[in-house]
Structure formats: C-alpha cells, structure tokens
Amino acid sequence: MFRRLEADNTVNLILIGFGNVGQGLAEILRLRGPALKEKHGLDLRVIAIVDRAGAAVSKVGLDLTRALEVKRLLGSVSAIKTVGKPGLSAVEVIEDLDGDIVVEVTSNNLKNGEPGLTHIKRALASGKHVVTTNKGPLTLALPQLLDFAQRRHADLRFSGAVGGAMPILDFAKELLYGDEILSIRGVLNGTTNYILWSMSERHLTMEQAIAEARKLGYAEENISYDIDGLDTASKIVIIANWVMGRRISLRDVDIKGIRGISLEDMLRVKKKGFTIRLIGSISHDEIRVSPEEIPLGDPLSVSSNLNAVMIDCAYSGRHIIIGRGAGGKETASSVMRDIMSIVNSAYLKRNCSRIFLKDYSSWGSPERFYRTEALAL
Ligand SMILES: NC(=O)c1ccc[n+]([C@@H]2O[C@H](COP(=O)([O-])OP(=O)(O)OC[C@H]3O[C@@H](n4cnc5c(N)ncnc54)[C@H](OP(=O)(O)O)[C@@H]3O)[C@@H](O)[C@H]2O)c1
Image (tube, rainbow, N blue to C red; front, side, top):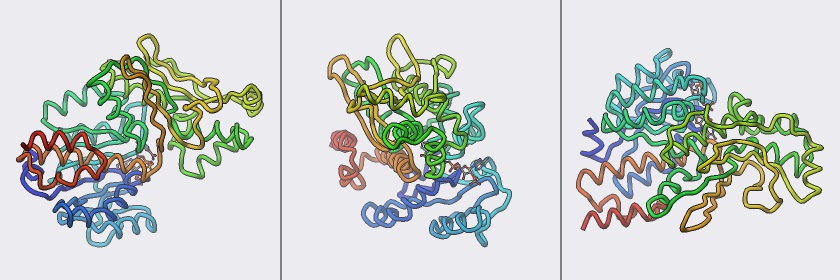
C-alpha cells in the first residue's frame, strides 16, 4: 500500500466529481503542475476523472486543458476521444485503478451521504488516501471514517469541507496543542451571508437575493441546505467531532435558518446599528445554528459571501479568521493543500529528506517546515 507515494515523485490522483471544485482543482494543477515538477521534481498526475455520465482514464495522466474544454462543451469528460469511458462508474474507477489519492468532490447529500460515502469507503478499503470537501459523509460518519482510515493506514483529509479556502479546521487543531478552546462561533455559510448582506446593504428582498446567489453559483444544489441552516449545522458537526473531540450528529444541533426574515426586519435592525447574520456556535453547553442580531462593524458582520470564525481560547484569548468560505477555485486550493500535506507526510516517512521540502516555507506552512527540519537533523 502507498508504495509509489513513498518511493518516487509521481503521485497518481483520481478525481471523483468534476463540478466547481473538481474543475477548480484541474485549473490549479494545470497552472501550477509544471512549476512543481521543475522546482521539486514532483509529478502530480490526474489519471482519472469521473462525473455522472462516465469517466476519462489515462494511466500516463490526462490532458487537463482538454478535459476542462470537453466538460464545458459536451457536458461530460466521458466524451473525450480515446480516453473517454461513457458509463464507467466512480466505484469501478476507484477499485480498478492504481491511484495514490482519491479526491472526492461529488454533490453534497445530508440524508445518507451518498454517493460520496461509498466512494470514500471504497477508496480507503482499496488502500488509497482520500481528500474530500464533501460534507455529507463527514457529517454523518466522520468518527467511523477516521477509525476506518486509521485501520487501513490511510490518510483522510477534508480541510476544504469547512470554510472553503480558509484553513479553519487545521488552525483550530493547532491552537489545541497549547490551549483549550472554550467556544467557536461564526458565519460558516457564504450563501446565507450573501443573502442577508444583500438585504441589509442593497435593500434586496430575500427572493431577489436568493436568485442572485444562485446566478453567481454560491448556492448548494439544494438551497434549503443553506437557508434552513443545515449546511452551517453540518460544518458545526464536523468542527465539534474533529476539533473538539465530541461525538455528535446533526440531531444534537439546535437549528434555525433564515427563512422568514424580511427586508423590513433587516432595515428595522439596521436603524438600531445592528445587522442579522446566520451564526453557528459550539461551546461547552450549547451547539446551535440561528440568525442573530450583531452590531454593525462586529468582526462577524462580514460582507458579501465571506465567512468569519471566532475562536475563544482559555489562555490565548480570541482568534478571528475571515476569508472566502466558498467558490470552486478557493475550495480547490484547500484540496491542493491537503494533497501536498499527504505527499509531505509520505516524503517524511520515506527519508526525512530536505530535497523536496527545502522550499516548502514559501507554501505558507512554516510549522510543517520547521518540524521537518527538526526531524531531518
Ligand atoms: N463549491 C464550493 O464552494 C464548495 C465549498 C466547500 C465544499 N463544497 C462541497 O464540495 C463538493 C463539490 O462541490 P461542487 O461545488 O464542485 O459541486 P458541483 O459543482 O455540484 O459538482 C458535483 C460533481 O459531482 C459529480 N457527481 C455527482 N454524483 C456523482 C456520481 N454518482 N458519480 C460521479 N460523479 C458524480 C457531478 O457530475 P456532473 O458534472 O455530471 O453533474 C459534478 O461533476 C460538494 O459536496 C460541496 O458541498 C463545495
């Protein structure tokens, strides 16, 4: 298992799902791939891409420019000449191909986690690492998936599932090494933030703001996940399980969405110097999602589709992260971070080599760099 990843500089990626995030990752790999190869000798190859209609497969690596073009023009990568395989399923690809890392970025489903849950389980069972941004499987089965991954000696990473491009999960975990987290509170859903901000600042009705959010591609496939608070709740569940070591499910979250908030409500609140935001919060005694009145100018009163998270710690006080919580390329940058992190661990296991890691600090992860240097001594 993982022999190639620990033995040479070629990493075979299998990409399941080719929507906003999948295509964002293909763009990043297309643009940064050559530099990674030239600078670090690292060859990140996408050997398969799967969407609903089928797959494209090439053991020597797919032409990503072509894959993006065919997807845009013909709707499925399975239409690519010679490498296209109409009807080939994700499970067949995951089980039959010799990949190192499966990137699972199919549609979110909070009812039963499918199809992502099966993809992730099959990938781990067949000895592959997994990177995902898919909240359904993580919300419904994170502790079980982590146990399963550990038993298979595989990595399961999901930093893009909460906060899109913002490394909220990793940041909070790092804080825990030296501190105790008392509470986490934040705006975790860019779509509802865009809707509420548009109502407050641009005086749109909720229907107008929803229509705009859909047009801009901010909304989940099922918009009720956003506006009824389920998306925020699923992120709270992932944070609670992963960062705070709780074993909770969606049923444990007290959830209230933004449906029913009118433009008049927004304007009335604004006159008092406040705004309304959908806030997810976890503390020792409560786990909830609810619209809250917060002062204009408060760090959580972020604009447009931004996310903002406040972490209160026993010793180091308050930490605030604000950034882009959604978007195909933004979220794909988190997937890329997770892929590099898996590659980094594999290289470490191999020989604590400085060869690849010597320029790693420029990737924005000094902690890993220092730790690596220490190990390499
Ligand atoms: N976009 C964001 O900003 C963001 C941020 C954080 C997390 N996420 C999560 O990341 C995941 C991907 O998001 P997205 O925006 O890229 O979604 P998307 O644009 O809707 O893309 C979903 C992709 O999954 C494919 N798919 C669905 N069912 C499949 C199946 N059974 N087999 C193979 N492929 C299947 C779809 O195929 P077709 O193309 O053929 O329809 C599509 O390519 C979601 O779970 C989402 O909640 C997204």
